[in-house]
Length: 275
View 1 (cartoon, helix red, strand yellow):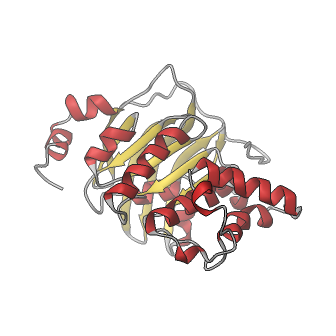
View 2 (tube, helix red, strand yellow):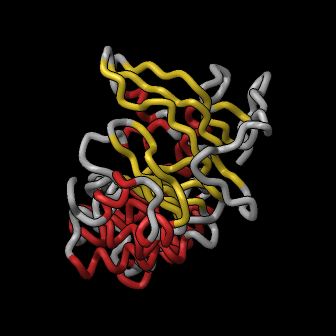
């Protein structure tokens, strides 16, 4: 999905991510000198990193280190919190997402969000998935059914719910509800999926299903996952960024971060010495 603004801000291609750059991958985001404040409290400090297309990027770090703040900044959902101020750039397809001409509805459709706790609407399973397409003007009932079926199949939920699409979504199990929320995200055709600890409220079986699903979805989507679970990050991600006190301490291929970190603070964190 291409964002349309009057005067796109172009990325300075001479600037390189000092921490990590995979020259063989296309970039979906280039984050340049990103700072963020909640009032007087600075939550992100000079964050510079790239996020690759059709890969899973994990964001790890202790509580309060800026992981979720960074995630919600990528589609500007962080601005729903009062007294937020940012500077720097997040370049998405050669467009700075902070440009005042960027349409936030369009941006958040292209960059979808899945939250920590499943949050289905108190509507039918069908209406949950059809909600976004309807907002975007899809009225044809056959087209809506097609979108709902495709989205539910993508999250391996169709066979479980196809005979009860009119049932209230709140009657689903926690794991099913989270997969429904992912289907609701997919229904508007995003390119990027942001996931904020998507399995922290789930049992181990449901967690395994979500992790398997993430592996399948990255064939078609770019995924950024915040997780406290370092074993999960090691299992599902291609690249991992370690945040500490609002800064990116290390960003590299996941196998390197966990087996041969370059910063002693990363080594201490992934080995369980703090956090």
